[in-house]
Every structure is written in C-alpha cells, then in structure tokens.
Image 1: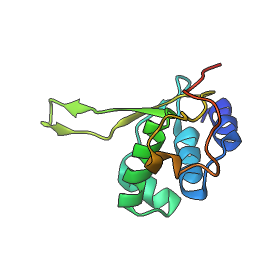
Image 2 (image 1 turned 135 degrees about the horizontal axis):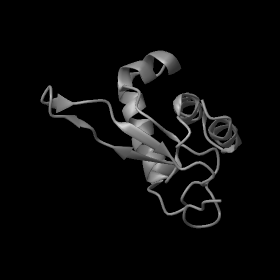
Image 3 (image 1 turned 135 degrees about the vertical axis):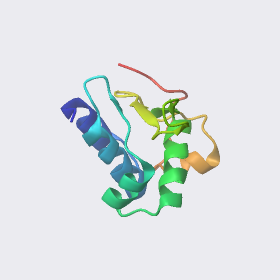
Length: 116
C-alpha cells in the first residue's frame, strides 16, 4: 500500500463509486504507483458490479487519473489482469468526455492533468 496514493485518492472530488474503486487501487499499489488486480476482485472488494467496474475504470483513465496497460502471458497464451498505473498527484482532466466528467462531484475549472 502506498500512503501517498491513498492520500491522493481521498483528496479527489469524486462520486462514491469512482472514489471507492480508486481507493481500492491505491490500497494495492506498489512503490511505483502500479497494481494489477483483476476486475472480479475489484468488483468483490468494492461491491460494484463488473460492468460498473469497467465503466468507472474507463472514466478514471479518461480523466487522466490512471493509465491501463494490457498484459499478455505467452506461457499460457492468454491475457492476464491489466496493470493500472495511478497518476498520483494528478488532477482530473477538464477536457474529458461528458461521460467521464459524470464521475466527478463537480467538473474541474482548469484544463488538463497536472502532476506534482
């Protein structure tokens, strides 16, 4: 767990579903700010349905709060869980789609994602 990631996630002005999902990801991050939980475990831990988890993850990515990397396992010939890289210290992008901006309690006034 990254204390910095948790504090950052708590500080963001997000609605409950994206907040709890981002907090769960922050709780699982390593020192580099990345983690790779499966969508099923995220659903179970947060109480959100799998489709809600997918929708919220897309929105958080579009807001610039995380990046999603797809992992492939050549040994077993299939995809593994995604890797999520949190943009710790970043703020929501004002130029995100209307759908992504619905995840926020209120839309940001400035544009773009900032980093510390």
